[in-house]
Length: 505
Image (tube, rainbow, N blue to C red; front, side):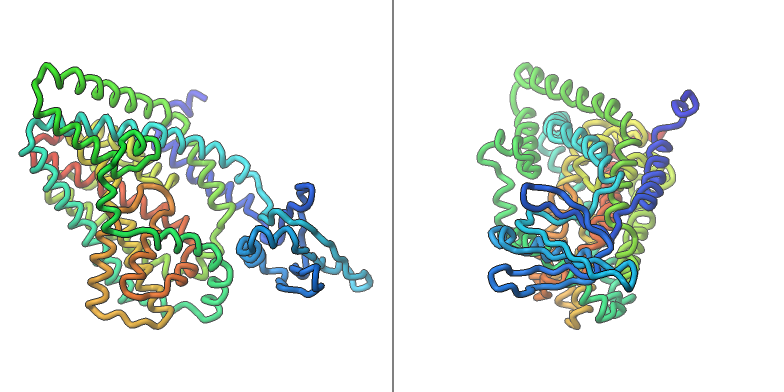
C-alpha cells in the first residue's frame, strides 16, 4: 500500500489505462449472445443461435432473418423499428443443433421491449468511470465562468484583452488550419477509401446505418450563422443550467471586461469572490484526481469490452491515416510551435501536460479535461493564472485541432469510398467549413459526428457514409481529444511568452 502511494499520479493513471485495456480484452462482450427483454419485462439470454427471425404475427410472414454472425445487424434492425411495431412483432430464435440426431429447437419472444448485448463485468463497472467524468463536468462550468471573469478582469484594460484575444484566435486558427491541411494531404496520398472492399462497405452500412439517422436530423437543425447568433445568450442563468458553453464564455467575457471599466472599490469585491470561487474549483480538482486511476480503468475497460479491436481490422487504413495525422500534429506541429514561439522545450511541454493527455484520452471530453489542463499549465508550465483562465476555457470551446483533422480525413475517406472526385476547390471548402464547424463543436464526446455531417453537406458527399466510420468513432474520439487539449495548452504557453509572463523554471 505504501509503495502504491509513492507512485506519481500520472503513472497511476497510465497503469489504470493499461490494466483497463487488458481487462476489457479478457472480459469482452460475446458476439454470439443476446439479451432479450420481452413481455412482463423479463430478461432472457440467448446464445449460439442459427438464425434470428422477425415475424409479423398478423400475416405469419418472416420480415427479416439474420444468421449466427449478425449480432450487430440484429441490434441495428431492432433499433430501427418503430416503437408501436416492436410491441406487435414476434422474435423467433432458431438454435444450432448440438448433434445431428437432435431436433431444430425454436424459441418465440412476444412483445419484445429491448434486444441488447449481454453485459460483461467491464460494462457493470463503467459507472465508476462515469461518476469520475461527471465530477469533472460538475466543476467545469463554474470553473469556466469564474476563471474567465477573473482572467478578463485581471488583464487590466480593453486594449490588453483585445491584444491577447487576437493572438489567441490567430494561433488557434493557424493550428486548426494546419491540422486540416495535414488530414487532407495524408488522405489524398494514402487513399484509405479506395482500399475498403465492397464487402466491408456493405457490412458497415448494414450494421451502422440505422444509428446515424438521428445524428443527421440533429445536423439538419444546425446552422453556422445561427450558431454564431446563439453565442449571445438571452438568459445567462438558462445557459449555465443547460451547459451552453459558448454562451457561458460570452457572458463571462462581457462581465470580466466590464469589471475593468468600473471603479476599483466596486469591482474588487466581485473579482475577489470569483477569484476565490475559481481557487475552490481548482482545489476540488486535486480531490477528484485521487480517483482518476480507477475512473480511467473503468472507462477504458468498458470501451474495449464493448467495441473491441475487430472493427479496426475493417477500417485499418482509415484509422491509421487519422492516427498518423494526429501524431504529426501533436508532436511535430505543436512541438515546433511551442519551441519556436514559446521558447519552451517540447519535452518539458509534453511532460507538463501528461496527466491532461491521459484524462483526455479516457474521457473524450475537452470540457471534462479543462480543470486538469488549467492546473497543469499553471503548476507545470509556469503559465500565469490570468492567461490560463482566459485562453484555456475559450480553447476548450473553439480550438479543435484533432476534431477538425478528423472531419477532413473522414470527408475525403467517405468521398473515396463512394467514388466522388474532390477537386482543389471542394477541398478548400472542406478546410473552411471544418474550420468554422470547430467553433460550434461542443467540448463533449461524439459531437464531432454531427459537425461532420455539415462538412459532408458542404461538398455534396452522402451523409449516409458516416455509417462507414461510426464503428471506430469512439476509439478515435479518444485520440483526437488528446490533440484538442494539447493545442489549447500550446497556445496558452505561446500567448504567455508573447506577453513576457511565462515562467521559464
